[in-house]
Length: 74
Image (cartoon, rainbow, N blue to C red; front, top):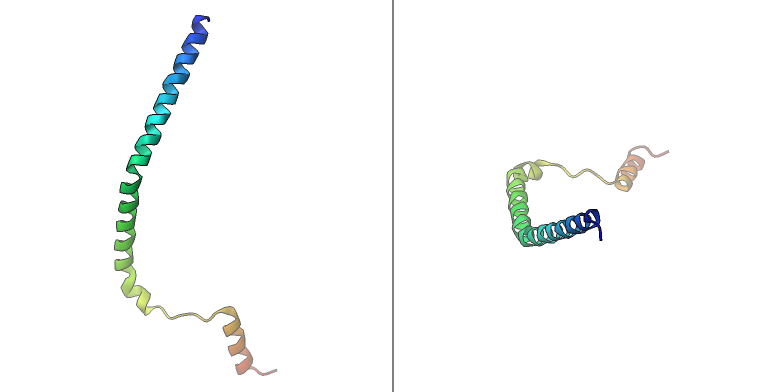
């Protein structure tokens, strides 16, 4: 085995260890990130609630078409 092959093999092993450690860290932090995003989403919902209550529901396409037919019988 030449020196260049040995260096390439050592670099591959080192990269694999780094990837494994990063995956483990990412998995360990996943619940924390999910909780953080959930809290942010709930806070945003609370700030938007007054505006959501004031929005009028728009009719669906078929409801709108029926109302047009009632207004303009052809």
